[in-house]
Length: 195
Image 1 (tube, rainbow, N blue to C red):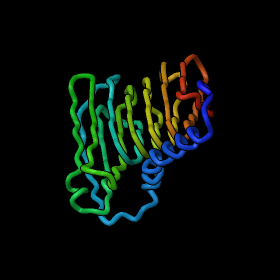
Image 2 (image 1 turned 180 degrees about the horizontal axis):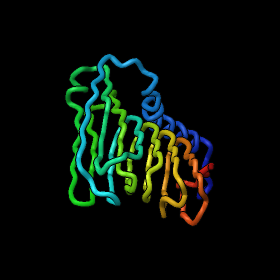
Image 3 (image 1 turned 180 degrees about the vertical axis):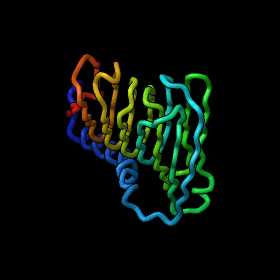
Image 4 (image 1 turned 135 degrees about the horizontal axis):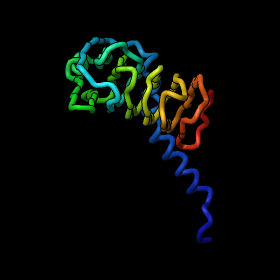
């Protein structure tokens, strides 16, 4: 029977998908673990209002809040069961004109980096986090937020941005939008944005 999937093939595919997603599901439990080693680091750079901030993070929670200055300030905590993994983790923080890039690197799995990022009030965001929760609070500017496993929460006035694109492969996307004016909001893949 060509073109008709057999039940054994579907079962095999389902098992394969579950096995592939298992590491992500256990990694999303990272915030409940007792870590043997932790280290908190701080960095800041001057930045222009209205610029674009690009953030890349593998595993960890990310909270982006509105600052009161023209600086990007970042405080991040590296957590692992191995001291060497904490020491090897790093942040590549580059600012060039109206663009800033923050790339968080951990040497291997079993390491989490929780980030608190403060940006100028009018900042566009481009965020890609593989596993963790992402919160964006009161940031004016467009937002392109992508998360593999975890929840996205956006708190903002609708009139403070033109475009929000938020997607979470496994997790929820929620928004506390206090003013429903003319902003365009798209949530991918077909997950509702509740307000």
